[in-house]
Image (cartoon, rainbow, N blue to C red; front, side, top):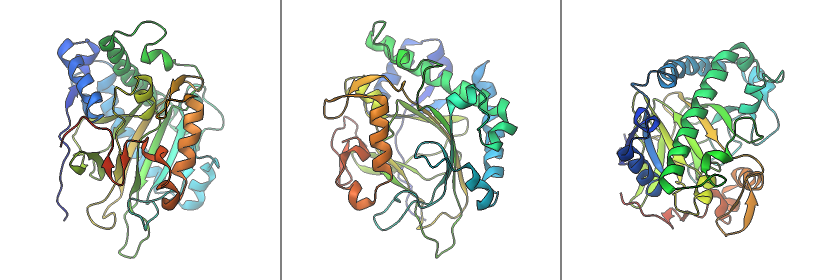
Length: 329
């Protein structure tokens, strides 16, 4: 088995962030300014987070059942979209230059969950309360983090991060179910390419190894921690912060050259309203919709094309080396 070089990430307590504990908020800012990655402890909270831990397990079982279906059934959820619906393996590039990805996913718009859209995938319709509750809980976690960051930076109304993520405004915020299937020795595909996330915050709920983050000392695995979400900063929060925060480069890479077991994750992408405006990595004024479209395009490119497009990693790295980092391994 390959060496598990692990990332030294801060562990933050969501209960303390909800109380706006000054020392915890200070550590939150530190995490966002350095690695752009941190653990969030969801234990010990008497409201949403306790329910969230139980719902995490319920949704994990639902995820397993969904991907155990035949390809013929899952493909009915294909929305022919780079953003929503079912995606089969091989649609994107993999973790190494000679491979496609080994990921299948189902991504559902939060807006469709809120509106109980009749076009929701069957799995969401049949478990609507669970999907609605978990996306609501995730949204609360994300906006609580944003509000604390706004307070720490002394942002005034109109410039506060959470104000770009209003509940019912159109955005590309979504809930995703992911599986990296167990592979035979001759299977094609390996993990998922290096990238930065396009949005503001990503909440990852996973109990298995495979996620890696690029630090100043190279690639480090993110160790799964029971009862903890892994949270990372995306490009749009970096832009909204005036490049103060660090949108981290990460990928999925199994220890061996194939996935030895099914690897499941639940993911919540918190993204600004489509009309939100900010200056991108080249200091050009763009909307969230425009940055989304650029990232979706580069995600689908070949590795040769991606190597010529710095949007893939938000301009944060070059040839596997961080370009902008205040973090040390």
